[in-house]
Length: 95
Image 1: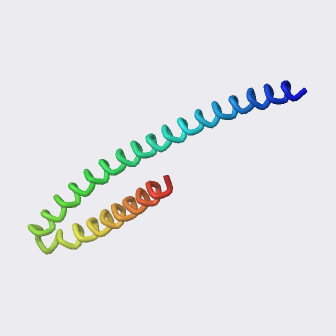
Image 2: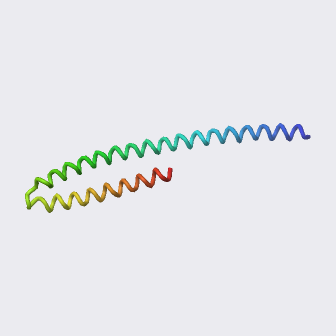
Image 3: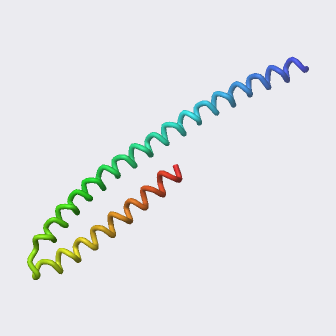
């Protein structure tokens, strides 16, 4: 009877070890996928940051009539950028 129990424990142990290895591999892939998604979001935000920089240049050269409009647009875009960066930071820290 002890031989049968040992064989069962060995078989179940092997199955558990295999499942654990698969789960670890899936976790690593999920983390890598999360990192890729974060990198893609970062690249998009860097592009947005460049667009904001161009608007700042426009603001420097704007007339008084367009200044207020550009200022409001910039404040909105910078607030969105900051919120997006904060969201990515949270996701990366959580991953």
